[in-house]
Amino acid sequence: MSELIFEKVGDINGTYPYLCVYKKGAVEPFMEISVTDERDIAFTLYRVDGSLTVGLDQWAEILQRAISFLPVALGNESSS
Image (cartoon, rainbow, N blue to C red):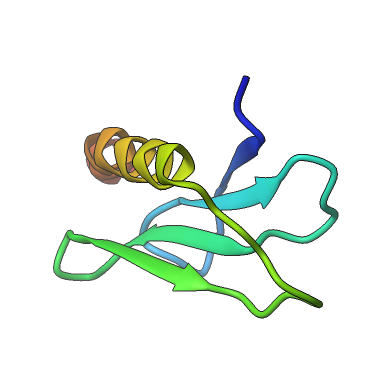
């Protein structure tokens, strides 16, 4: 079972929704997966207290979620 939690966030000030990525049990996200104005994926890493370890399987999960999220986020663009 994954130790990652993905939360979709919509912001009225942004063109596209984005995903916040948390480690299970964390209160704050360590990453944001967003869509740029060029309609591409961007990964923003947040500072965390202490160290954060992400394994290869988790990086693969993050990438897969980002790839799957892009057409969904862009699809919301046409319904706005």
